[in-house]
Image 1 (cartoon, rainbow, N blue to C red):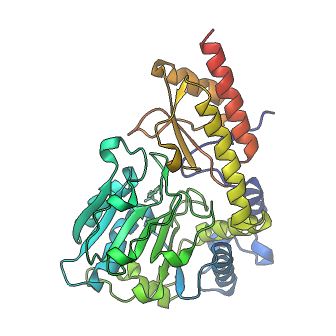
Image 2: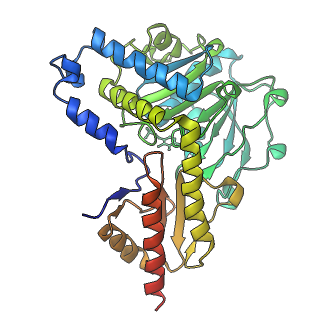
Image 3: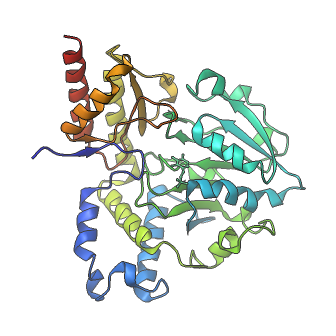
Length: 368
Ligand SMILES: *Cc1c(COP(=O)(O)O)cnc(C)c1O
């Protein structure tokens, strides 16, 4: 049987080992006689699952001790409202938030934040069709914003930051808030450079339903009075992500993924594999003019690779031939069209090799 490779942008492929372990523990977790789904979140079994997941994540990302790891719900988009409700109260009202607009997801964050603060779009690559990150020197930052928001990997547009912006001196030490939904754990990061890191789990961590927030302690405790208490990070932190029922099964699966990552050698080892996978695909795309990529080389995402067939009338044929080869979910996001290969941690290099071989053969046949 031909292997199946799933290139979905999210919810996305998970390591097979993790799914197998979850299957074997589905009815009876570690002799408890219960499925993880059936356990009280306040019982000793689930408490141990949560504590292990938190400490493994802290180890994997080398999260400093003055940062809290919160397990929430509401998704990446929910955080677009939850973040301003937690952070703008640190400044006189109305506060200003600075944004760097590099694609669809930072665009959505901008739209939502306008309900809670003045928004300054300090830089945008929109007029260039979101082909990269505007040069830092050109960012028109505010003197004293509540924070500076970035999406460090634009999942739809395929744009990734390969640097950490340095805005402190120009913004009265405003914290950087980064949406890392689609590349968290794919590369080594210096958490201490950020005030808040957040993301939905369903791209590179686990199942949908879990939202991760890593926040520097001194940023807690200023939530606006309109902030729902279940989303006030101080409440959540004081209750160790148990203020209300957390998404227990998603946390359990994420915990299995963290353990899998540790067995692979951790984030640094994963990053080397991700570099190799992305190089294989981009080198092929650069070698042909049958396929086209639009993002500038220095901002190309290692996780999400959008590409287009030069002759778009072949799109449907491309997708159905790919599916026949076991290469699934390659259709691009509806807002940008074309194709997209998402090659997250759980995608083995063999999957990218199979994709490149298929694309080469499809181009050869189409050009006969
Ligand atoms: C998927 C995604 C989101 C949205 O997440 P939801 O969980 O669907 O709300 C936000 N930001 C980025 C970068 C994403 O990739």
